[in-house]
Amino acid sequence: MNIYTLIISFSLSTLLIQIIQNLFIRLNKLDIINERSSHSTLATRTGGASVFLTIFIISTYWYLKGEEPYDFSILIPLSMMFIIGVYDDFYNADFKLKFFIQIIVAKMIIDQGFIIDDFNGVLGLNEIPRILAQLFTIFVFLIIVNSINFIDGIDGLAITETIKVLLIFEYLNSGNSKLFILSIICILSLFPLYYYNFKKNNKVFLGDAGSLFLGTLISIYCFYFLSSEYSLKITFNKPLLSILILLYPLTDLLRVFIIRLKNKKSPFQPDNKHLHHVLLRKGLSHWKISIILPFGFLLAASLIVYFFKI
Image 1 (cartoon, helix red, strand yellow):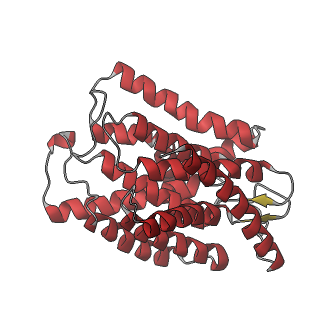
Image 2: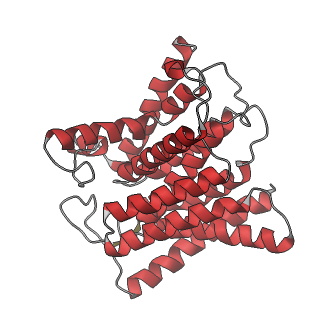
């Protein structure tokens, strides 16, 4: 990793955001404003495309040069989730179709070696049989991906949470992370989106293509974190720590599921019951919520780690 890679990642993402947005505006592919919308101006759901294409273009350049700073096979499941996200942005895909694709992608990730096969003593369990490990990994994948998708409702929130989670996973690694290069490119590709997210006009959102893609990347990171390859620099139970790292999106997912089931609605039926909606109704701005929720839950998780060394 050199300074040129950092500059190119940021610059290429910025350029692609503008190019793709202009293309979508000309094609009249705009984000439809409805009762759940947090905006009232022209916007496109193209932010995820700029991030994915930045990673893809840089990775293709490395591949053609014969360099492999990370395992390029990871791009296959990431690409599949990005594509189903694009389809969802255009055609509002049925949640059963998305679930089916997500299960396929989870199996692909498992076959690449990312699997939860050791509970590290949680519930009195350690290593578990292969078939149970695969089923549990698929279950966790579905939870993480959809939890990231659920919080992508206001400007900057999913971006901030993603950057926070990736940096925490890297910070806690006492060894050399095999995903470090990929995470840095992703983070730098996300930074320009802050400007386009918070613009008053011609806004750019992540879209489902972005949130599903980022949720998949976070899932891969989580599975890597739970593997024996990842060397944790602090003394704490890995599965419990992974839950604390993802405490905000997991809490929001569980909360809205309970509310929807209590109201006899489908857990996957969109509404305005998320935590960010609660804070919006209290009069907080988007940028304040994008700080309060990710870092408020980070503070709570840090206090738990500090006082309960498990």
